[in-house]
Amino acid sequence: MRNAELVARDLKAVWHPCTQMKDHETLPLIPIKRGEGVWLEDFEGNRFIDAVSSWWVNLFGHANPRINAAIQEQIGQLEHVILAGFSHEPVVRLSEQLIEVTPPGLDKCFYADNGSSAIEAALKMSYHYWKNHGKPEKKNFVNLSNSYHGETLGALALGDVALYKDTYQPLLMEVITAPSPDAYNKEPGETDKAYALRQFEAMEQILAEKHDEICAVVVEPLIQCAGHMRMHHPIYHTKLREACDRYGVHLIADEIAVGFGRTGTLFACEQSNITPDFMCLSKGLTAGYLPLSVVLTTNKVYDAFYDDYDTLRAFLHSHSYTGNPIGCAVALATLDIFRNDGVIENNKRLSACMANSVAHLADHPNVGDIRQHGMTLAIEMVKDKASKAAFPWQERRGLRVYQHALTRQALLRPLGNVVYFMPPYVITEDQIQHLAEVAAEGIEIAVRD
Image 1: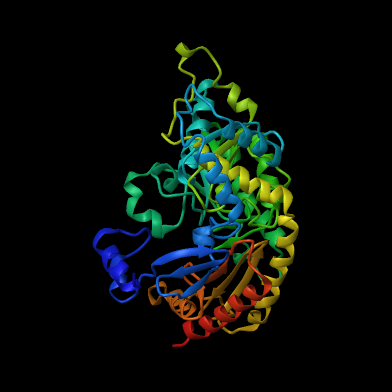
Image 2: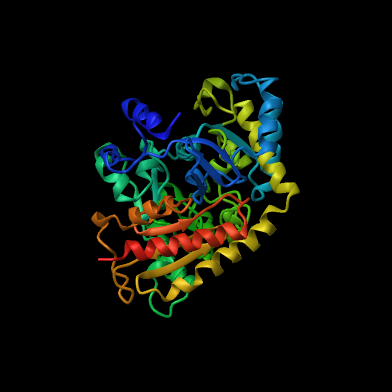
C-alpha cells in the first residue's frame, strides 16, 4: 500500500480529532504503518521521531517487547469481565501497586476508561461525598485560569482554554476561576516561587469567602499541558493543600498528563509533598497502549459511601470496560519497568540533555521563554521578546514548525506558538540533539515575516 491510497480512503470515512478537516486539502495526512521505539514509519518507509509521545501517552516506545508480552499473556487468559460483582487478579494487583507508589493516604482505586472519564468520576465523588455528609449546598468547583481537564461536559467546564470551551459554554456548569500561578506572567526579577505565592492569595480569598458552597478545587500540578505547556512552582500546591484542609474543601489533582515521570518525579504531587483527596491518572498509566484511567482516593472518602443499599449512598457510576484486564496487565508491565529499570534516574540525564540542547535559543529574538519540568520542555515563540507580545494565532506559526519537522524525520506538534518536547523515555541523547536542531530550524522558518 502507498501513502496516498490509505489517505484517500481515510478522508472518505474518518473524522479526525482536534482537526479542521478542510486543512487536509493542503496539509497531507501522515498514514503510519508501524512503530518501534521512538520511531513511527509510514507506508513508504519515511520515519519520524515521536517527540510528543503520540499525544503524551507513550512512555517506553512503540511496540515495546515487554509490554507486548504482557498483553499476549493476559489475552490468553481473560480479555474482559464485568467489574460489578466480579473481580480479577490484574485489577487487584494493579490497585495494590498504585496504592504503594502514589502519595500516602490514597488507598482506594476506582477505574474508568480515559482521562475525561476519570475527571467526571472525581467531580461526582466529591459532590456526592458532601451530599452524604448532609451538605448538598457544596456543589461548586474551583479551577485555575488556562487550565484543561478534558472534553466531556463536566471536564470541559473545569477547563479554561477558550479554543476548546467557548463554543460549548451554554451547555456547561458554572465554575469559579482563580488566577493561574503560571510563571510566564511573573514580573521581571520575580522568582517562580514568589509569583506562585502571590497568585495563591486570590485562591485563599475564594476559599475563605465561598468554602461553604465549594466541593473541590481541581488543578493540574506543575504543568498546564493543553494550556500551551505553561508551568509553575510546586509551592502553590503545598499552600493549596493546607488551605483546602483549613476550609474543608477537596483537592483533586489531575495528573493525567503530568503523572508517571513527566515532571521529573513519578507524580507531580511529590514535589509539593502533598496527598490530594483525589488523584486522576490515565495516559502513561498504560504507556500509550490502551485506554484506562483510575481515580485514587482516601478511605475517608470511601467510607462516606459505605452503607446499606437502601440508603442510596452508594457511588452508582460505571463504565462498560471498567478495570479491563488487558489494560490492567499493560499498566502492571508499565509499573514493572519503572520499578526495575531506574527510569526516573535515567530521565534526569535525558532532561538535562534536553535543557542543554536548546539553551542557545534563550537569546533568540523571537523566543520569549524556555521552560521545563523534567521530561517536558517548551519553547514559546513571540513576536517581540521584550514585551512577550504574541504572534496572532491566525498566522499559525507553530504549523510551520510542524511542517518543517516532518521533512526532517520528526513529529513536533506545537500548541499554538509553543514548540515542545515530551518524548518517550527510551529516546537517546543523539535523538534529543536532532530534535533540538529541527526545532531551531523550524523556529527560524516560523518567525520570518
